Length: 293
Image (tube, rainbow, N blue to C red):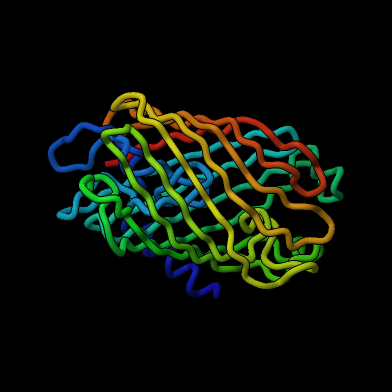
């Protein structure tokens, strides 16, 4: 598992710069429409903030290669999450991504017995392949763009995650996603099914004392293209509940994504992450900045 994860990470880091932000309904030479490539999702790759989309990251068309880098910050009452990553899109068919997440417990770490500012770190290397459809250019059919993918995850605190009940510090998520852009209605809709054992997306390990098996979880997004540069919308993501010591809630957010240009975008959201590690009502700000080509 570890060797496969680091091979994926090395490939993505060597080749890529990351996903192109949902790029805007105006054709530009050599690239996708603005606001139609997906922002960088929390675990890397093209998607919404917390949901994976079928779109291939990068500003490339079927004749090229594209990518970007992103930095994301999430602040809720008792925790902070920082993520940075790169994504590569190959000919609008294959996507490789790499993200590094820091889950900072701050003062909460002392209350949990971990120590002030204790930080969990996780590396996520992903691959996605578009199977059928084109979310943007197939406007004469309801067929969405469909993609499948996998994310290889490694947590850097094996002893701690096992102490709270997790069965492993590494895991693989598998997913299938379908996304459609309805230009005549200025809408973006997307849904995905994820097979996972991850606790808090893997930040608290994989599997648990309650359950240690793969379960199907849903991720959905809907957005309205207010203009060629501005997208507003909402997301919902269901989560497994594997650990006996703490309930794990579903995630939801409302977001605004703005493309300053073809190469620079920002996403801001109000996120409701529910209960995390016994601390209730974790709601707060999500901000992500992305630069690409």
